[in-house]
Length: 481
Image (cartoon, rainbow, N blue to C red; front, side, top):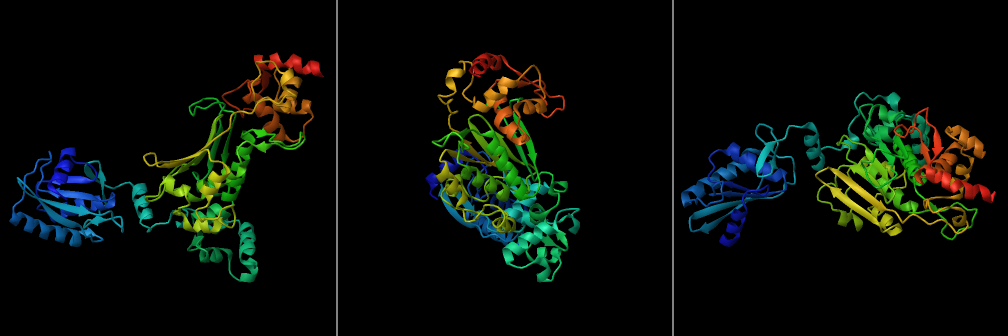
């Protein structure tokens, strides 16, 4: 570092990468500064500089004393030891000792009292929160959240039949032929410890995983607009169960919330999803497998009129960036869970998931929100498909573009306020889920039908009635019949 470079740093003042000290006399205090920098990405400690950035300067004797103090602090007062590099810069006011501390490879670094220090702006602070400490151990590879035994879990919480099917499918022999108890086999596969299932084991083969892992689920909401704070919603679901069940139900929620377009197919064939299904498969699997289990939050799935957002707790691990994962670079956070999920979910674990999703649908934004400690995948939808020519002449201008023949059929049978079951019966439909996904929800989304209790979509008192737009399109539809 030259004098000119030093003066530029001093002019900018202290920050999380540069700490000024006029002098140092205590090895413990100096060790805390070194540990904080090593735990926070590395940086420089500038000795011989006042807090205001002015150069106080050091003489040769002071530099010699400080070098001895630095060596003692780094090797004897920090655990594990550090190896900072120092050099001296000559200025008009005297020498400035520049101590460069690299980003630590063996975090967390502690002082002799076992305290962990990190940078907090220009200052340092003592880490006391258990969650933050756990994340530091996780980043250092000293803690694998998916391998932590689940508190209060027992062997009775394991679905032995589900595990048996998996074991036979993957290893080619039955549990009985293996000659070991299920829990022992799970321990051998790192899915249990000391006779108790760990987080990975419970999420993959638990009977009711959310009884003990409440936040390990997906919160899904379908909004009628583009605003997250909207108090209205068309559908919502707390998606729980094993990881496989969460994936299946999450995909079902996405598919029933999006449009299906004809895309050149025959009139009587099922439409094609407006966004290729493969894009959602890859993103949802990534969220389920790679989420940070040390963050007490659920995966969130939001469907808006212009986009779908899949938000996973925990930002990208280490220095991984969205640009890197776009090209296939990966860093598996939950190694045991990922290993077994590769044989249960459509997951390969080779870093190919995101590139494959982008190949199927390029209009995907990947946002690593480190301050919020979450990762967001935003899938932009196509414009709402227009009504086909066969339907348009019978629909007045007030009808929105989401109108389909199924919706028009529903509008035609509406009489006053009707319960869901009554509308379904009037249409002669037996499959409740098909009626809901193809008829009722799209009619509400199109603004032709409204709920009498909009704040509580699942209320047993819920009824449905035509809106003014629904009444406006009714005569032209009925006259056709």
